[in-house]
Length: 363
Ligand code: NAD
Image (tube, rainbow, N blue to C red; front, side, top):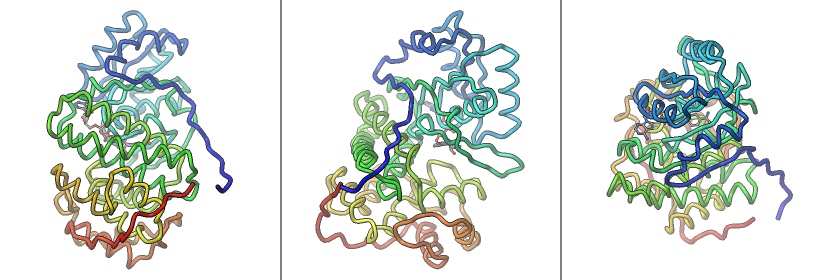
């Protein structure tokens, strides 16, 4: 085994159906007594419920999170936290709400307690994003990593089917790229493989019955692991492409990750046999790429960039943008290669690379 460094994300995780009952205890454990509860307008009821559970430990709710954390939205939330004298922020929702909590923490160093209700995984990362004049910039700062995360699958039962499926593939994409990251190590690989296994196992059950608690638990547990490896691994072509497509053309986050995933896996398959072998083992299949695409089709996920709003005329510019900053990727990224990949993703077509025999997984 080669030598490696593993950085565990600090933080406490409380997992389980009904785990939200521990919210008051967990706020107290943070030494906080004046929590501000954040959500999107769509999840204001959840924010209000959490505030009621906290009683005097809550100073207010701020249900104004929106996608991609516009700086104006962040400024208003920071002002509200200061006005109310909040000593912790509770983010109840998906990546957009957790993103808003991160913007507050970046400015004020207030601790975040996250209550994730999607599979995006932001609660496990020190990565923040802020959007100004249509341009999203991201950064890393230890202050924005939540101190405590409460994963309660009961809070995910109302996540609509299309979002559940695409959010699940968003999680799988984090783990897939972690498997071939330049700083991958035996621990992150274990977590990534288990994360893929849990999400891929849970999604069909969610499709069959949105309120199936056991499948919801599998997906949320998997999303935790996938988010955890996202937080400590250097991402490659897949995340670069999705960042470009989301940032420049405003394509929807989870859908974009879903459509792009099998194409990047096909692009990298020959150069990342250990990663493919682990995905295959996790999904109990002889071919990682076709297994991901087949699962997408079976679950009714979007399979082409065209159907999620991309224009064919913009593909060449996207390929150029992907070439702008160098980053590690198992198969070297060329403009022609990126354009061909995008072209295939636009149409939802690709050739499945041969995987004649299951690769032995090393490390
Ligand atoms: P989201 O947070 O934008 O949520 C989408 C919608 O679904 C919102 O209206 C939300 O209120 C609603 N929703 C969420 N959970 C629900 C539930 N259980 N029931 C009913 N409705 C629910 O979507 P997302 O995909 O979780 O997050 C996407 C954002 O997160 C993007 O901006 C992305 O860049 C960011 N993100 C950041 C990181 C990071 O590490 N910084 C990681 C992943 C995603």
